Image (cartoon, rainbow, N blue to C red; front, side, top):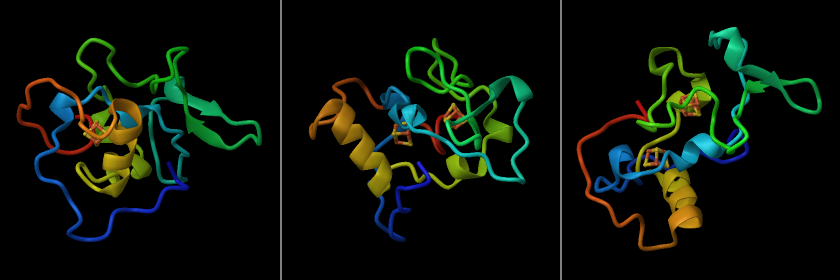
Length: 116
Ligand code: SF4
Ligand code: SF4
């Protein structure tokens, strides 16, 4: 995720809701910053030895609840996750890659922030 630039200010699709998404952004790699304080069981290292958030064998973040598809460490989520705009460019690109350009065909409900 760190290699993907943030969405330009104001470039947000307000119709997009995390509650109508399979947390596809939570499949992206998340590098941990020095200020991040997540539970140690969710810390892993990449091939360079850099701290990252661990993933499950299914490809989703280890901190994601597989039933609710919500972040179990939302209040402690890494800095990178905090900067990921719901409905922003990166969000839309990840959803397009996962669902295609039409998006998921499931009802939209209320949500805010990345996978809370
Ligand atoms: S931020 Fe975007 S990609 Fe991530 S869960 Fe929410 S809607 Fe899906
Ligand atoms: S928002 Fe939570 S579940 Fe999603 S990638 Fe970040 S730490 Fe993992």
